[in-house]
Length: 559
Image (cartoon, rainbow, N blue to C red):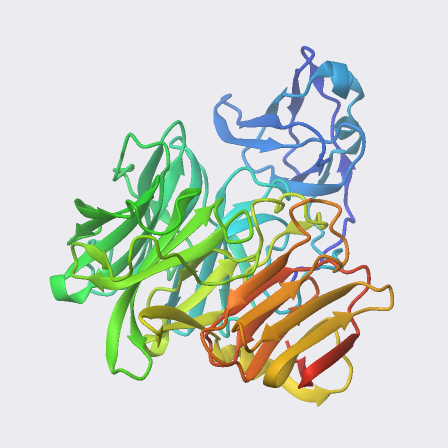
């Protein structure tokens, strides 16, 4: 994605703090500059910062790991309206030392610009990433007037999970992303957890024809569902005055996903509620009736159910359609941590009925790093375009980047296919990925598409001069595909990272497409019958591919 390039040229050091106790300080804010640059140290404990205006009213509250010993990076805090910072540190003085000696007091400074020049060698080239800060679940995804809108769970004040906000980017081709200001910020109901957006084409909500309606989880003392709306195509949102709209006494009650159901002439909302999905309906996006729930006894229940999506998809070669319910789960994935499971069946506007036996579990992607998968509302040509968070909760906070953490997967188009007695989700790289395929090249690069043609069982290896490698294998007899990243590079940040992941191929594989981008590998059967997404962090890029039992072709990618 495009990055703004600015430099520190007018920096001014901040005033000294008022030290009030072992864990409490205040500091006057100068607002002659646009930003106060906060120094972050990731190993430091959380500090709570309340930003006050001239009437001593709290205009913002956030958590940041203010530097104690050294600065890992800076994050910008806008000074508009601010006159005072009220800071409470939660670290232990016996281990962190005296507050007066913290590095943050020496390193805080003001500036009119914030340097976002990329400083990360593992930042992907053709995947969406936040310009800075932490990112997890994709949220609020919709298409309108030639533009794809992608919101996401974002922490603007550090590259670890905290301060959940909806960040926002837009794209005309699903490859190149333009960052926009945050879409929805925390308020008195809580921080902003996952949700979705829909295009209200017929003004059912009363906010205007083609208004964008966002539903999200307000995560405070309890999790409740709130609404916001946009009349400028999703660029800015205004919160509904009667939030929260839906409440519950369940501790895990979140991630509303909405769509229009034509047969019943109503909006449908699917909500993750602990170990099940709840289904609601509404004629106007404001008044909701609970219709049913699904999940008891079905699929994997080794973690919390999250981030649902429900859609009708064509079944290849049949002329028929079926419904698919996406259910992301953490933990409980096939190789540990988070993953995306799904159910196929029927939906009548009131109930979802799964066609498989309760004990059947189906995974959309058999890699370690594919989670929170949801689709865009209002996609053109009736497409179902999905994007996932490309990481795993087991180590997402520790992967070896600091300016930012996490990327989204490449876009994938979904459909259904039959294998034996079961119907499965087909996953194919979206056609936009072909638009960046360039000429055939001889040498493997860190941003390319590798295509392997197969005639039977095969094994291939991607490696560098340091002996780091990723080994992939297709077993035509067992009908499985595997990827071994146990010797892929840096895995020091987590014992859960070195792993071999294995996928069923649902038949014979004739060609495999592999998208390589700095720190990720996304593998697809060319017919879309399996997908596998894994991160890798090689000390230097893999530059050699060795194939036994197949033929490799490498394409440059123009992004």
